[in-house]
Image (cartoon, rainbow, N blue to C red; front, side, top):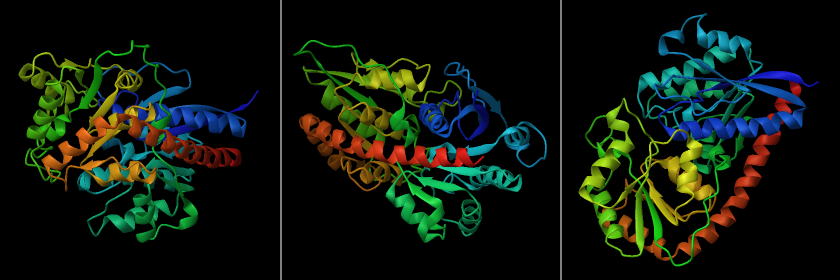
Length: 390
């Protein structure tokens, strides 16, 4: 009988309204199961993060939810401390891109403090594939560097993050460059469809960008008018007789309106009768299975576009931060448009070009997915080595 190893999955969530965070959780658990098998151990996971109101994505015998709140972070007791005490090793994914200061002081210190506790308890710490930075304040780089240089492994998911880590003084022997673990999220294959039917086009509309960010004042510094651009895209595809247009949410929140893609999609569907709106998904796997049924896709939620990309759907990601170009560009897929630097006309032209050349985009994706496997296999092997040392 193999030995059981308790793995704390820090900043992983089994019921986040952001299905991208959920995709990271389920995918990383799948990868870590493979690493544990290589190491000859049996994993038991503690998924540690906030608790959102929605039901869990499902039940897995080896995954236990352990929720905490901000007030639990400073103290020596409570769910966070108890989870870290139980853990043999801590795998921290930082919610994908939250180990940065662009979201404010509170979030940075919250994410950093959990690393501090892990290190002070003497627990081996691995930072799973994620975007790290930017750090635009004076306090963030030394604090982040301190934590990362005391980690067993820091895994970036793109070349810009790797270069950033080097620039702020993270030891190179601690760093591995992989890619986004959500590339390994399982899904159901779409049902076969007859030849000559309508072309299914999926558009992920970010409710957050439709609302101008949390500040409601173009928080992310987009060059154009995002709501107007979305309406132009819908009008362009909805007006075609050969297209069936689907508006697909990937952050679906009944409680936080400013973030909710689903509300934005339903409002747009009233303006454009006949446009289809995706359901309120129960899990990231259900969302990816829906997206996999598209013939062409575009969107501003990165993990919605990763769901398309990793299921071989031709996709044009619509970036609002460097994480998009980092993940896709590192894999040699250069179809990303940049909403912070490209005009609405330029973005629309790139989308139309991608739609017209769907076969070429799929060939480029197939070539990139070979690199995905190499990078994630290397991550799996290094984690297996760490598990073997426990």
